[in-house]
Length: 154
Image 1 (cartoon, rainbow, N blue to C red):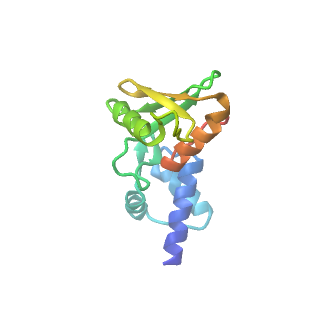
Image 2 (image 1 turned 120 degrees about the horizontal axis):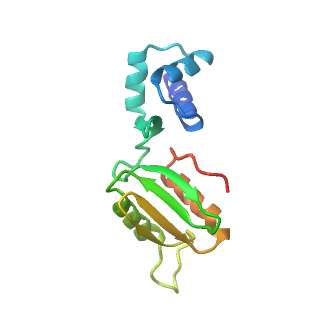
């Protein structure tokens, strides 16, 4: 049992740290650290761990959040704006989630997320951040809600 958890942890670690486009790449990396597993077993483990191919690379897509859309990419502008890219049609529901959970509509009871509001298109969300100083707080919120994301350096 402990060996299975260790292998699962190694798989998650590799997926979070590397861009893996093929299961054979992941198999090779696991073999290098002492886990020689067949492709069929690896495929079942990926499904169990909620790891799937997103935009051509394997990502954790359902890490304790089965109802939230997947964020494909995060960008930060020089002006402190944060852009989230989703699948077509997913931006609106994800922006609504951020608005409900992290945006305060009562100035006397502000939420400490650093997010003032969102603007959503079809597959893109603009997170309006209170100040550049709040970007690291917003990055923490993103990582906490979407642990599979590889966030840009601030």
